[in-house]
Image (cartoon, rainbow, N blue to C red; front, side, top):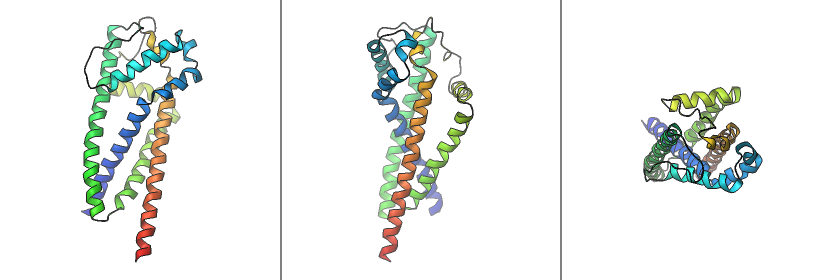
Length: 213
């Protein structure tokens, strides 16, 4: 029973860590600001750096904002299908936010229970889960990023509104595929670092526990 509880809590704790990392990476606008120059987005989009920043900031704030409002970029036109797609993306982020909040509450409860019972076994299971998950996710991305990108969109959306026409939705030129590859790599990288950190903490606790006996 104790092992089952450890596995359940480890999964919840892993979900909390992964959702936190995704929220942090997506909300870290400075990363995109760096990519504006790195990916040569002004040339790709035909937009000024200031315009790109302003519209990107709006997209991120729109996705993370609790208020459900109509999608309307500050200075770039959008088609009706384009607006619907961004509304659907926002819905995904709102679900992610709910998952984060639920896993946070459950993780706090679990941590308190484990600390009171002096149980650190869940750290070992969590570190394993956080290593296995990125490896599973990385495999299709490394083998075929474009195919994985398409499959992700077909899985997450029940329409083809994510296939943008740059003539009626020019914002797509400011969101090149390479950008999503960079974001994905950073998210996976932070997850792996988190797994290693948790493993090190677990080993440290085990050594301290053994030294007391």
